[in-house]
Length: 176
Image 1: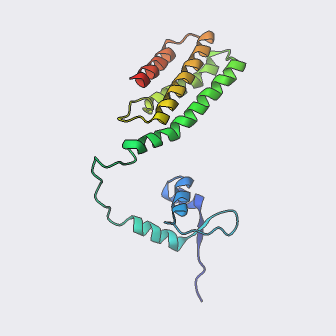
Image 2: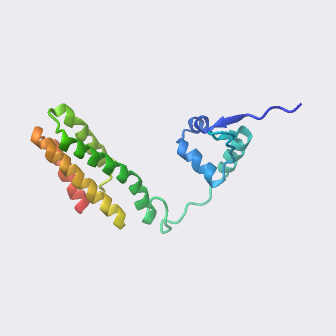
Image 3: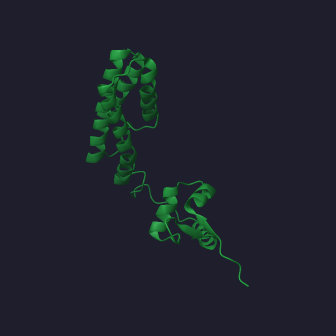
């Protein structure tokens, strides 16, 4: 009698490997991780997952030359940055529209803005890249304008030198 096959969900595998669900989905979509979709959810045979992991744990190829384009340099870096610049811009401009309709009344309502500004600056979003493509430059400009808009609205409620300094820092880094 043969032993029954064991299947795992994308979420189970993502938890086990400490990666995102999207990473598992990319592996499935690329065909490198076999999966089955008997209904609405993907299922991965434990045996297929083990084979996949074994193949990935083989000795690594030599690192590419620093002159070769990679995810972290060249045009690919710009594409990677766009993936987080766009959501930040959407957040900032959405908040600005909301504040224009219903301005904040207290510094407590403004605090998340300062926290978001600080996080963006600390993440290095405004650090100049070697090459900035047109789409990236456009997103940075729109994001900067959005932060300036939010800061103007916030200053009508409460002047904050620290927040103003962060916005100035963003403007200077972008225009550098």
